[in-house]
Image (spheres, rainbow, N blue to C red):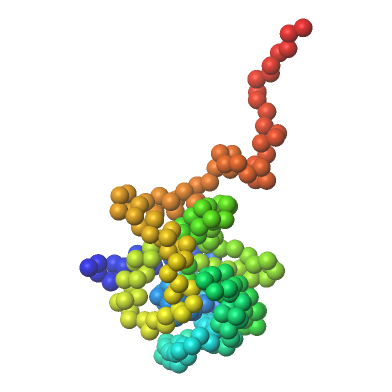
Length: 264
């Protein structure tokens, strides 16, 4: 098994690359780190705390968890963990679980509605806490899977960007784990023995399209190792003139330098 020190270094280097490449953090930032209780968000918090210590700039961190009132949710786990770390934190209690279950037809996935409700609540919390940025725990696999989900099922070429501004243009959303492999995060999480809290909503639905896309990519990796790295590079190497979107590239105005003469 890979040495945990090697895995830690790989994740730190990947996060450092994302922070630098996308200019994620500036001096004086106050960043809300969204903590769900899963392996990704625990790793995110660890990395943000690490760079807070070693970065040549000063920025604040506040960890925030949304307690969605799922049945059996161990509400004492995160406060205990964050108190031991001596991290500033806030637990938001909002029964979005009931809203999602009431509004979602039987047999349909809950992810879309759950995500919208959670996002709105977290944006509101960031404003209340005077944060100018918030960080999410999505990693490289999430970004690639989302691209294919949109490509195959939504008819658009779009994914999770490493950095974007919200519709109100008052918050910048960061994904510092954008270049991190999920397998490295899992290894790191297991070694750190994070107190994982399982999700009883999206994570428990076996027929999700995302799971099918994940399996498709996993199968590709068997035949073509490190194919995910190639796909991640492709998302950063876009040629608009070689796609078909007329809103992004002016095909109408293209002119040839060759002048066609007309015979009289």
